[in-house]
Image (cartoon, rainbow, N blue to C red; front, side, top):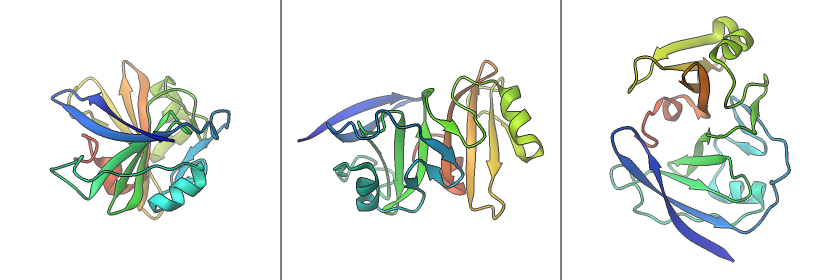
Length: 178
């Protein structure tokens, strides 16, 4: 049975409502997924919603109108991968957000690791940018060789607070779909 519920995700200047639809499946509960520049576990940037559902063995659905300022973009989350938020843009998976420890990048970095660990693993590939809302924090971004995908880490007090992977433009958004 599919359940539908709303979750408010606090953002520094406003709270954005995110419509989430989840099933009761526990398919991915014990999997050790890895994040790379092209996706997380079986999820690959560019997948359609039916392809994501097949990969997750889930029944995610989208209800139009959850992003009135940008209807071509929306987020979904699932019980099968509770540490992930999936951003779809123009009906394709564009970005995957990881906001809790438990999923590591292909170099072993996870939420909670230090900024120094990211810089040590990615070296000169890391581009640092001051955080949009807190000048003491930063975004650490690693681009793919073709500059089409990126991995971005957000910091909090010298540690990784969250990270996301996907197409370059959506990865650069600072307010979810904005």
